[in-house]
Amino acid sequence: MTSLTGSMEIGISTFLEATPNPVTGEVISHAARLRDAVEEIVLADQVGLDVYGIGEHHRADYAGTSPAVVLAAAAAMTKRIRLTSAVTVLSSDDPVRVYQAFSTLDGISNGRAEIMAGRGSFIESFPLFGYSLDDYNELFEEKLALLLAIRASEKVSWRGGHRPAIDNLGVYPRSVQSPLPVWIASGGNAESAVRAGMLGLPIAFAIIGGMPESFAPLVDLYKKAAARAGHDPETLPIATHSHGFVGETTEQAADLFFPSTQAQMNVIGRERGWGQAYTRATYDQARSLRGALYVGDPEYVAEKIILLRKNLGVSRFFLHVNVGTMPHRDVMRAIELLGTKVAPIIRKELARIEANK
Image 1 (tube, rainbow, N blue to C red):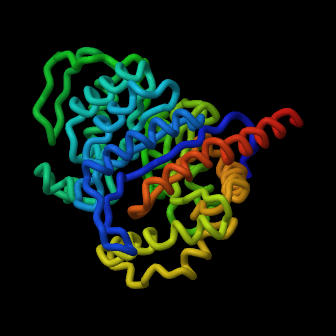
Image 2: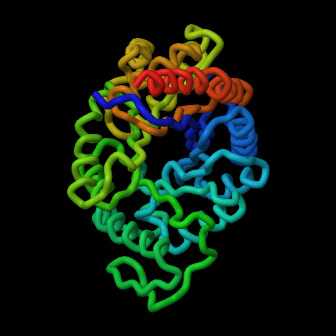
Image 3: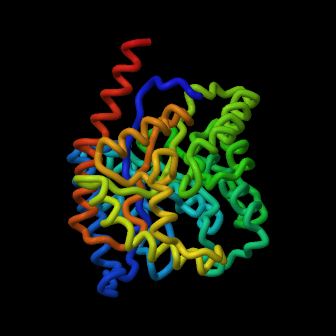
């Protein structure tokens, strides 16, 4: 078990869901969902949350094809909150443009931008941008190396197999932060954990099923790989991202969050051939203390996040609200409760433990 010391960041992640309302069938427009997201980021900043992340997807049921653009729309209206992709599908993008987009965001926000790079759990972007899934792993490795080279040096020379060469050319604008933070995102792949550790990059695990404590061996792999490569594992941030919702009571939160979650999980389940329907029993089991759904009143959600901290030693937690489309007012209230109720409970408990060391 990891010792419960140091600070912890609490934030929101989203894919900008634009799925049919499970009750009325109404579909929110992408434009409306994008405007709602800007309001969410501003509120998250106002209530003291630390980070807001937007995932990149290229399908009709999500509006987040350009996370940096949405984050930039809110950057000038916020003061403190960090703004990140969650994730950037680096395999099917151009690392030069990724760096430029997020260094631009970094300038607008005065040093609050981050990139969370991943291979992507959805594959729509590959045919859209002319890439083969046969090159899935090779694309990510090559493009990550180029992205890291760009952030390390104003002038870049590059040769690779999937992108035209770069011969001592400058990439601008340069980021305010030096270096611009780059995280590796993983759904639980051991190879990804080892790669992130060897590169000395922070890692974010998507934990959307099973028991979060089962990720402890991956955390150990990550830290051991970092140490072997000469990095201090205790200085490397670890984040997790899990679905959840905060309500006035646990019963209210559970009832509000279930319909849209069930609808979208069943859509994804059919696409991926999971076989079993997502039921209320499945959902309620995942809401248990050791489950991967963080749904409940502020005290219960805080208790679950503190347990996660004890088991994995995470330094950042993303609550993914929402899984399918929910009323904007409900999402805004969950963000408000996360910032004004949940986060203070966690901070107080961490401070108490730190004081008693």
